[in-house]
Length: 602
Image 1 (cartoon, rainbow, N blue to C red):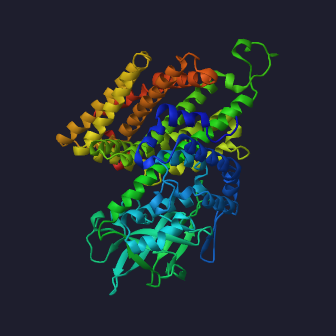
Image 2: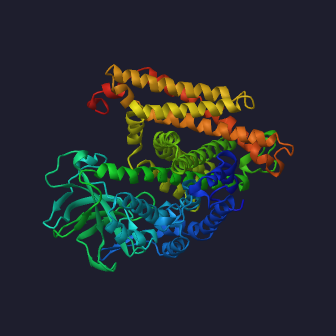
Image 3: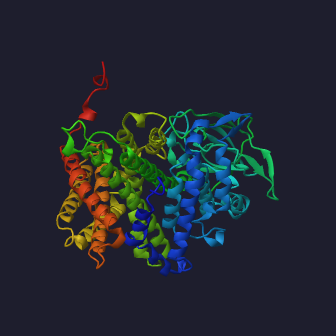
């Protein structure tokens, strides 16, 4: 195996054989691109990942970050990678050419960034910068764009997302950070933010923090929140750096994983001089920040995919090399030769489970990114709404399902290694530690489930959900003749998903809101399994066509047969869990709400 980060053959399969991303090049927006250009970018991403980023994974974890003299120092090995990242223009891959970027389709950018995201601690310094820059592109004044974007696009200046506070946490509307308006129309901030990923570093000359705060006198709750830009160093009119702003890094969090990522507490305005600029309009902070949060949620999905991929490929290689036990045919012969553990049925079960989920995540994340590209590339308003609708409905699945099941993939990788996997001598224990944060980042997964059930299933957005069900049904109908033993199972699961959503709607109309609210997370996971089955069936249908070609799949015959086996395994062994989840939801049982607080423990 050439690398243990991503299977490039599967990446190309999803991009070109399943999703046909070359079709984008026919749209005027992407007319300057070609498959050769996409492949060139992906090949460079692979080279960068394997030769520079992956070697820093363990070293960055061991060294971690330190706070000295009010400044954060990140692992030294990241500095060289950061310079290569800048020189490669990776930060502006998806930025429009007129804004100084390369203008690649998002789906190609996602595929390239997947190569880097196994080292999420390193990547966080740049991904957050890209998200913050996009906020300024969308909502900033011309002066703010001129002041901040060039250096942020070059990744010379960094960016963050400063939402969380000690007393508020997920309840953002309860934040205490206040913005005090000055006579000249500028603002001074006072408050404390915690868990700020990449809150400070010595690889960025300046850092621009988008900060949520409430202007004095504005109403409580999320409706009264505004968003401000707070630079580490004030920027002079000529673009040079001025004095350091009045905020301090209180501490770096000691975490379970991602030790190379500086997760900071930031104290704003201890001296009353934390200068801030309003971004967008007053009291529109949550609306503005949701743009960055939704992008970050897709980013968390990519992180989860990358963590799953590297864990699966390491476990696969280990299973091929580790000799232990004899073959089933020789079980009673003590003198039988030892065989690689990949020959043992239970190990093969774990490996195909990991493979199915990892490849399902990849198909999901790439499909979601392609929806964004198709929306951007068309002038047809109906098509634009259709693809934006798919993206809206799938975003909670990309974030929550991929991160929770991605953690289970890393856990299963440890199980394949056995006792060695639990030891730091092997890398899989770090994969698990680094992956766990993904289900907590950008709104814990229970919040994603409430977003799905509360926002994406009702009123107008309910049509987006129905359109997605229709898209699934069209795929199933297309491949029914070629896959008659698999397609009906997937269609049945789609029907179950629709029925469960209708149950939630009926419960809401009847005033039984606790049924959808209490079962939001099980519903999200149920939907994640259905969506994965749909995508794996789609992959199997493409593979079946390739195997039916005159050359029988050619040199890729084993690859395509593997696609069929993987889809079959998921649909026959994992997808039946949907029925159990739906049965539990339909029972209407609310014991989790009916138990008294004192009933949990005496």
